[in-house]
Image (cartoon, rainbow, N blue to C red):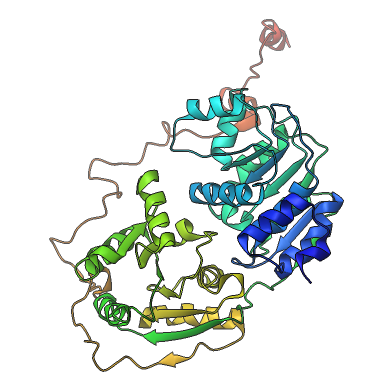
Length: 450
């Protein structure tokens, strides 16, 4: 199949021609007619399969020119970086189409975004938090939304956006088309579909846990952090093979720690992104890596999820992820658009259980390689890697800071509060041997006469 078979219009064909695209990816081919029909749709496809074009091609084909100020298409994504990326992709496709596209996200001046909205837009790309803030100001009116797209919905739910998504659904028009894309079909995603979608048609290209065939996977057993650094340094010295490398770590502190170690050797080739970095720093790091100015990017899972960076030669899992689905998302950063890619995972003895879960999910074994002889096995350990020695009856042992202090005592029985609920008046009656009611002053007098 080619894009000619999708019966697009001339402006879209011209834009695709400029981009050098002739053949749609499987998700683009399968999703086109469903989205174009106006039905609700759930697309299950791994990252790197062209999901943005899968929903934007049919939407742009059927989006008529309009002068109205309120947006007609809403695209929700989990991170700021994805907003920037999706807006860029839509603008590429809209090169020969007269429409207005705007991206909004937190961490920037909301008043500037209000002004841009007031000038009129057709397609709005947003993170859930900033979208809801703008909607509450009444500058952004969502009454004209015809199509709602939620991309990377599993990440959105992992980040705790479910409540905000439900609030957004409540202020959108009831009559709209819902389009959702996810790399995994989790229970939370199912609940969202059942609550808000109307008989959606599911388009599934890759089963969760199915590795992309064009990604070669290998792994190393490595004893500790500093040996991992030595192995990583050894691999990265081969600049011809490892020409664009994305390195995943478990958390922000580890990202900074690894960056500091690699900076000693690869200063001008290195950049890092995580959520503690400023927005400008994060965007600059991504653009420098995408442009080839930096060869190595160190990132946490959330920051790199969904980012479309061409020609990533290697994904290196410096830490083995606890959840096997996160491993699938990570390796999907390479081998994008049906190109060849390589994935390498480092795992300590403690991380072997995580490797087993990953292999169970993929139903395949990741080939194990021997450590190169030139890689030094470090004896130095991080604090969290050192064995914890439990001591008994140690007088200087640190106490539990949350434990009650010496002045703590239980309340006496008569002062202890009890939640009596609706039985309160019966407790009073039992205690004082007489009924106590509200509003009837003569009640007790009558009882005395009896």
